[in-house]
Length: 456
Image (cartoon, rainbow, N blue to C red; front, side, top):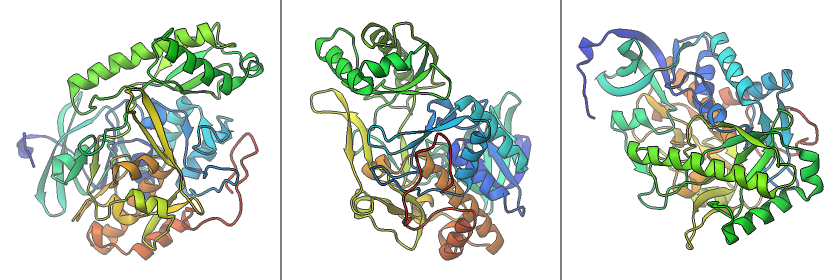
């Protein structure tokens, strides 16, 4: 553990029972789940000026609620349902059909989602702080972890009894000395993606000209003929809640680390460059896009993986493909392995591998507990998994479910005065089920036909 401060010289900002670092979708749900027990104090700290992480910075679709294929099952519930239901109240969602093999997606208005996250957090009575970045961790006593933050007020200290690392990059775990694997050490790290949104798209004209099939063909032609300098032969562009607007996952930036600032800077520049090359392609080659313009880029380039913590259990590709649901599971996943990587020919591509059998597997509790942990949990894309398993279990419905389990586990740990690795998993599963989570393969198909949300 590297210490750069004398904690005694830094003003105390707060003492809290549960500290959640990172207000992405996993962190927000973790804090709400912990605060919902109304027994212990909860604090949520975020480095940006708004909550949501990937859900509001880059994307506009929740994947992972439903399994892919012709017989979809809804496999996530509880607090993640509550988020979607709040968006549905203002007609800010619709269900996107099964595209690119990922299953039915819940498309939402990311700007409205920022407000929904704010409301759910404040209604829960959480001590909530934005524009605040973690810079160091000091373990002074067994149940007193000093986290040093910086914001416009200067350096401040938060003392916590329990910590949930939802930073995305496992920043807390790295500073606290928990072991992790760095993406790219054993297999190529997944690529980075700047998402962008466009207005003035005439969807009816686009569909009449052949829709997505036509777009993919023309993208491949542009790539092969080098009429437009695209990084790949295919990418997605889909309708948004806002009429006449589309959102994309098309840009791909490889071989640069999001943990090295010089490389991350290069990635941001390259992502913007590719985005406007895509704009030129859409306007030149895709019917219905002739008058389209980029109206927004993701707040930062999207990062799929950096650090992955070694946990009490490490999810593997073999476990995903086994389709088993162990008794230690705290959430379900049906997402295929979706690995965004550079192919042998140098072209960026996406590798898919689907879950056989029921198409569903269970994720053990130990994947959100750093190895040997007494007072720490890790949720979101830095949870404990191999590269391939991570490529399946990183959808936001699953990371929200991780947060739900971690928040409840932290409260049980405080109530029973036990270590994170030693909590009663059967009791945790009961608490998760009471919130409405799904931990067994549903018997019936989900209703994905309506243009809105239904808690099946």
